[in-house]
Length: 489
Image (tube, rainbow, N blue to C red):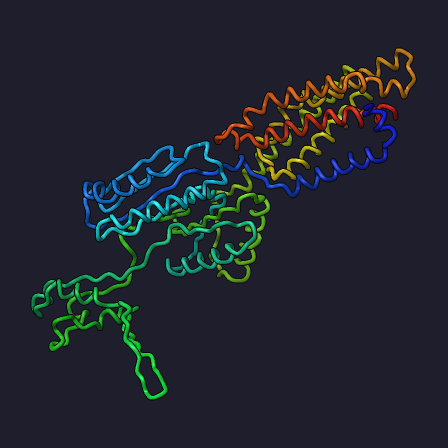
């Protein structure tokens, strides 16, 4: 088949398809998910179990060893590391790198089943093991919330408000708070009063442990009516705890405030604290959904924070950027886009100097159509715009113009030889179509082993191979159908 002659007979269709590639590529660049680096599935989970009062040796023998033996019976396990501390067991489970991404969640379900089966063998006092497998969430936006003159409780309330509002936004996967100080009620026993009143510490502990328990109190049958009986004895305030009667001293009517100082405060020492410019702050961490455009999500979050500050947050409450990935992604992509534009300009200028102005323009236009058309196909294949996919264009820039150079040079040679203009435009396509296709396929196959790699390297270079394969094939097609049309004008 004479592809170039077919293009002349169907030039309107060719122009339409070229327009689709250009317009579709531009729209794809806008709609496509933008990331800093390719998204990779984290194949790591952590099993956390607490065993209060146990030494590290007891934790190792009674908890860690039991769970680890059950976990190692799974398939697709690459490595298991365990850490036993006083009161705590940590088991790190890592899947093999060749585990397919779509099977990772199934592996974590199997891990939960194995851990659940081993729970019956754990000692009394050990907590139910918790399996954490959400390490793949990247908190690309980190804000520090400060409030001038606000208490920790008030600042936490406003942080919860922001978390609730942002969690409902499209494109947001998860919102977490950092640096929140857990509240508690401190009961300081006064030894001199306890000694004078004859109160033992065990009596105080028994009184405290017996409160806030939910107890079934039954029903009262009154003819046809059945009334539920409840006991409202839950203590929520410092005054309620201070009014508690000490167990074993009901006749004396001793209350907790008689032998203890009761104060509301915060847990000490605090595990996590956050300060911004020496001012106590609450951290707000935001993770975007998989496949979303981090730049658009960041803009939407900024808009929502501005609305909250204007309508629902009091004066003095500020959200400060600690880390803002959308800016890094925009700067990273901007750098590569500039490099891409520079490479196109360099190629076109060199072609103009070597082959003439018109030939350079023809090849340059074909190159631009190839680049935007590749974005269209990348978007269709659920690809993302990041440093690796953009670097593929820079890597293949020299190869993308080879086909067009061969066709344009062949047309110039045939025109100088005195051939009929239509014959000159189509003859070189008949002669070189298959050799050029073979060279194009060889270049694609050279990168195929990386794409077929079953481990993380294959996932990381997926978009790179798609861009290379699509752009090289498009350059071959456009060289045969589009370049002769432009050269004939």
